[in-house]
Image (cartoon, rainbow, N blue to C red; front, side, top):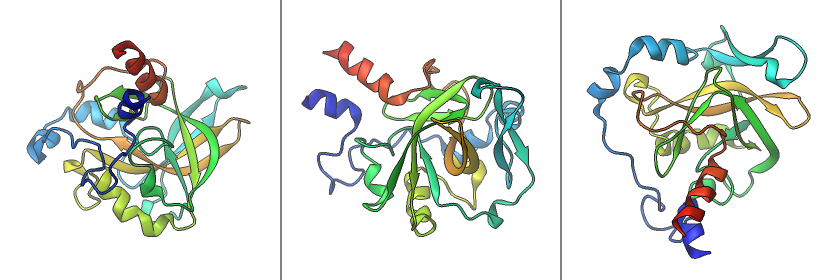
Amino acid sequence: MAEAARDLGVDRNPGGGGGGLARPPALGAAALRGADLKRESRLRDGVGQRVFLEDRGPGLDAVRPRPALEPLTAITLDHLFAYGTLMAGFVRRPLLGPAALLVGPARIRGSLYDFGEYPGLVLDDGGWVVGELYRLTDLVARLPALDRAEWYDPADEAGSLYVRRAASVALADGAARDVWVYVYNGPPGRGPRIPSGDWRAQVLARSAVSG
């Protein structure tokens, strides 16, 4: 159980600086800015835009992201989609606060990549990424701390490892909900794609293999 907890990134020492999650290798602003801009423009929804779910036919599998021109500064959201270390049982869950309400499971169109101790989400048509939907009445006040934890600098998006985007997720009953989500913004090819789109299952499978 201790090994499984360690692999899940559960914080056994809340006062220990990084909370049990290693900071990713320093890429440097130059490296981030030197990423494949053509790929970035194809995979990212664009600065100052939301990503919504567009229904192209019956069933959730017909849903894909589409951009809409509403500035992020005009958006007030109280829901956040967690797909990695912000989920329950992982090291960064305390950042959501004790009042965070778990609405339930949700999923978003995209691809999930394994970077070792944490995952990265890219919004594309690669499949579904599963996670947890949280409602936080104090989310606006918590965003600065969350941004820092996710290595996101709103004043320097090009140099940020992740960027925060407004998007829509699909709930278990098929309903859509507008949320904040942190999206990977670094160079491509950093880690393998997770076919299941499920970080919790990926970590548990890794733990089982390692014994």
